[in-house]
Image: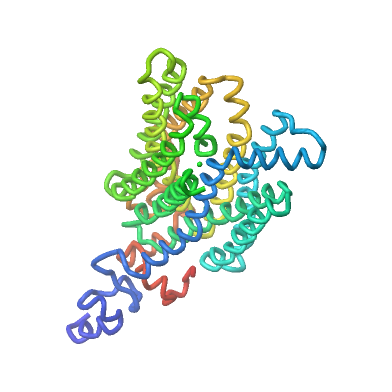
Length: 434
């Protein structure tokens, strides 16, 4: 390329990249001095606000009004049958109300591949808002209609919204972001989940009328915290997790995925074990219940710093675009079935094992720590081909050439790594996913 050809480079790439060579063999693209662009930031924030924010809000908003919802169930039952509801039946109904959200999430996850095939990622996120609106109307009208089934169905539909959101949004963010900021941008999903949880807790404060968010009020009550103080302690969990998720997003491209995941699971195991001890000994000293609060906050901070959001990023990084919907379907199915199991069984687990119930979670966290330490390679700033090679090297397996990511090979041959995000968002790429 001579000096005359170089003079036309800014015209081919756009005035925002003066003086830079085009990337590879594509004259319409260029590398920007910064990987962040206005369109990329706006797309990620708007998509997360309409998706993962609602999921986080739905997780926590059911916490504070628990006594009122149970009273509504009891009144409805008494009006229908002429006698109050049995305590075991009430516990079962409440567990179903909480855990049906996860069943809806599973259904939503299974729908993602089919909907995405016809609508694409961004349109799927837009259409998904219809589920949220329908759920809100059902739950809002349940009290007027005197039918608690409407509340349960509303939670189910809201779960569908969450299931679609937690698969479509991470895929969308992964595909519009360059690999240099893929981790930081991917953490937007977790950050907005935490912000949603915080707002759900904020609206549950007495002045404005509360896995572990489903039953935080009962856990704090078990720790000996006065009932009038519990909503404020619960609110602090939302602030802690939001802060932890933001810090994680800021350091993930510097520290990598592995340290945050291994450290998060390891710390959770430690604090779950400590929480078991403090709950068992809480009557021995007046300061022990407050140590239980510290343990709960530490568990939540450890979770949100890595295990809460990084799996969404890894699922997108492990698989090529053609295989990504199926990968998110499998990951989402495991996630929602686990949520359902915890939401349904935790009250009964707490009754039977008392404070020792958290040892179950500690064991799972230890297993996760060991698995990620020995199996998971670092994916920071790597292409799909490089990640596949790292897995093959770690497992002492040979990676056939035909299994390599042909896109990554071509990009490397052309001297570029990822398309410019703003070009993808503006639809200039023939393979645009928007």
